[in-house]
Amino acid sequence: MSLSDPQNYVWSSAKKTPSLRRYSEAEKERVKSNNPISTIIGRHVTWDRAKTSANAGDFWACCPFHAENSPSFHCVDREHRYKCFGCGATGDQFTFLQNVEGLSFVEAMERLGGNAEAEPLSPEKIAEDKARAEDKRREQEAFAEARRQDEIKKAFKLWGYGGRVGGTEGVGYLRGRGLAPLPFVLPLRFHPHFKYWHSRPVPGQKRQEFFVLFSGPAMLAPITGPDGSFAGVHITYFDPRRPGRKIELEDPYAEPRDDGRPSLIAPKKIRGSKRNASIKLLQPEGFTRLVVGEGWETTASVALAEYGTDVFSRTAYWVSIDLQSMGGKAIETIAHPHLKNRAGRPLKVPGPFPDTDDPRALTIPDQVEEVVRLGDGDSDRFTAEQVMARANARWAKPGRRQFDAWAPEGQDYNDILMGAS
Image 1 (cartoon, rainbow, N blue to C red):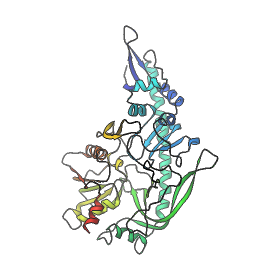
Image 2: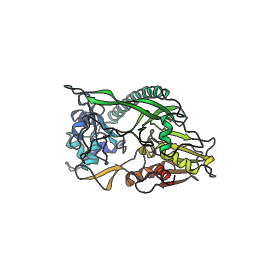
Image 3: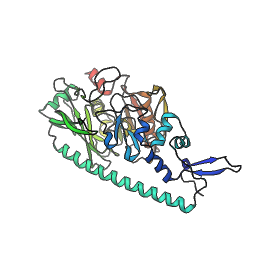
Image 4: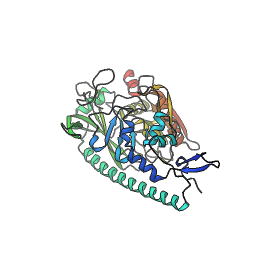
């Protein structure tokens, strides 16, 4: 008999002759259905009231796997899944208990009331379970792809609202960041009154509604896939009264931060899809060198610093949307050396070894001979190092050179540019 999924099996020594016990896919689904993922996770986090819609089984919180002030950890009861959009942690009820409480898969199953098969299933039953699981996987993928395409269409409409940057407050933002005037053209657009949609609880009801929290000037950048097709729009809201500074606006429906200060909304939004996508700031024909950063202001600062050098003409400058997109999914999480979660246990962060089958992670062209990854000094260094390690492993090929370039502690490359100007 083929053990196609080792975690589904456990040896039992209850009899003199050990027998193989198996957790069937049907049993795993039964356990999940009887144990809503929000109930399990809710023992370890505080749900964000503004973003959570408990009635719909849709929950948000600050991630228990890494330190953050804005909730980027999301779980959905009907999907039995959680995902952190900050550190990339993802899984189901079992993986959450394994990572947070240190349980084995078998211990997690037993904790949640799982019953193993007394005897190994027949090859026919195993094949039936595998076929059922594959059908469910295809159904979920089709649903996710339909949602992704719908979101891309909406993002393209938003991108169409943007106009030229020249002669607008957008120039003031760029100038305040040391990025105007530029000797090259960036693929940016500007909108003077771009709406910022936010969610709030509906009085007397267990659901959320969306409303326009404010509208103001915003810079728009296109997100494209590996073939150059439009995938989404990156939106940066800024304060025209403070040149070069992003908007600072209190979230009226969020809990105060741990230090008592009010929670601020994120000054950036992404609409569309991040799947194997990036913001391609500059991309010359036949480029052989690639510089990849996390923010477009940071990456543009490096492009400006390299302008006029012998490497500029053969270098493409990409933005990976967020840090985790650069490295992709990890095959396992590891303990952070000094950060703790709210239960006092070491934070678990995605480790250095990549899941090479992750279709969402950023890929780069075969023609690239040299890669420079930009590391910000104002983010958690240990977590970022794991991302860099995964990207290095995923992008490795004979003859290709890869480097990680770290900004000084507490700074990014735009800070360096501003300090030098």
